[in-house]
Image 1: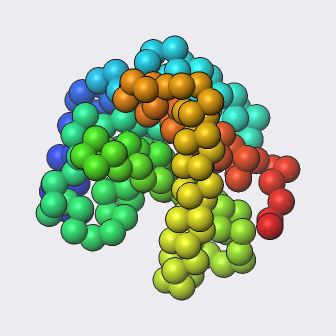
Image 2: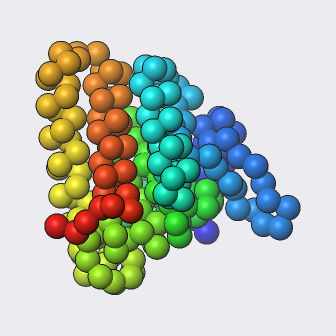
Length: 192
């Protein structure tokens, strides 16, 4: 595995961004669904509300969703291969198969989402494996359309609330992303 990706994961772990316990049988880390925001990118009250929402969803659906606010963005070399950073973090966190990792990187206000392999078909609302949906471009298209919907809802909420502070606006977007994932992945979710 790329050493820079491992270093990025190690930095996230060392910074306390991701609470962990190590399994005695493997190096896989077990995480608790919720929000990890060590730098205080969003107001604490918003982080707690979103974390509670994600934990409740994880408890009822069995789908863990972890949202992290990184304090720095991946380097150009780390980010050379599309999806490599998110795959490495998701693998390390045990989310690559059945879970979701949402990450906000501060440079360019960059949101990314990793949808676990077992959830790819449900998220894309198309039959196929994660590999097939990625290769065909359908997963990318589904994510782009989903993000457009989420951002539109966040913009509406931001205007309605009159939020002007960057942290509060970021928290509103994070909340819209959490709601969008829950709606998309809930057992009651129906394909369009």
